[in-house]
Image 1: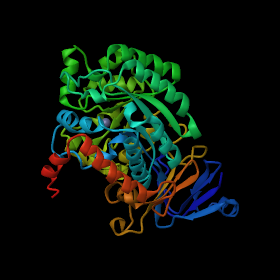
Image 2: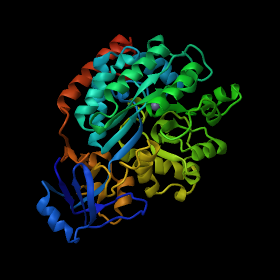
Image 3: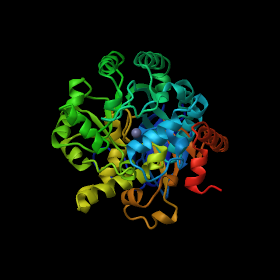
Image 4: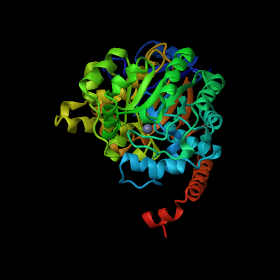
Length: 467
Ligand SMILES: [Zn+2]
């Protein structure tokens, strides 16, 4: 494995000290961070000599790669294919699940390729996928992740009931799977993909509390123990979810506690409708939250009490969610949304700082995933997952406060280079491991095919004036 010296620019290690190193450097060897500091360090001369590659990062900012804790790889193909202005349950029932219900393996592979391409291009180096139906083709998607060089946790979706919240029969049959088959596929995929290249892992992706039977919940908790696997699920996303818990005489945290689903490497997406007790229990058990502000805003779901969660010590990560609910897999834009949303929730500009935003997008996500000893910050001995953000662009000039510029002025497309496991994956805004043009072509073709199979072509033409 090559050694790389990145020198010049600002280094923001996100190591708990909230410091920015001006004129910094970072030296990577054997896939890990071996040294970092000020460029006038006497060791830099040695590193210049020994490095296989020297990357000039003057006019740039160097940070840890972003960790997206809630992504739907299979929804990238549905971007702009779902009407923008409808609430979550209708959005799922009439559109997302109808279209995903006709996917085949090739659709799954192409959607994942497009999503991973965008994540890499915008500086995401690690992600947690919410869960695949077997019809998306787990192997094809995992192969994309392996080839691309990104770090990814793929989840096998568990959904064996037709309900969402208290409503019955709203999930199309094409999206339901037999519980036994889910468990079998999880075991097989875990055997085949967990630990591949030290970058891939396989978790259990429970869909929602109302879409999983009690027997399958019970088995999931046991499976996770046996395989030392994580679990992720959508939780308390919309008000209807709370009605569901109330009708069963419980709360989101009470529901999970009873099913032995709290603890480390348990990551729940959204958690918008949380009360103080839910927050206290999550903090006490080390249970993770994937905060998805853009998705919550677009679907009008509500505002998660993230400031209160952080104050209580909950492990909060940031998530972009899916193609039709965000509609971008861009963590820089997501950080800005997260910061602005908390400020407005509290009617207080101190409601959420730029540091809070950067931390939940990096080390916070690593903690939620149980990977904080390996990734999430630039520290000696950690895996070298590093991004270099170009600051030679009008939207971030002049440079006084680089942190503020990343959160409020930059976008993901300002990322210039991405290094994962000490390997350059994006160089000068080009993803080296994926064929961009081919992915764009395939995405258009597959999208047309999905619309046609789902019987949505005509509705689309009418809705979006595509004459
Ligand atoms: Zn989601």
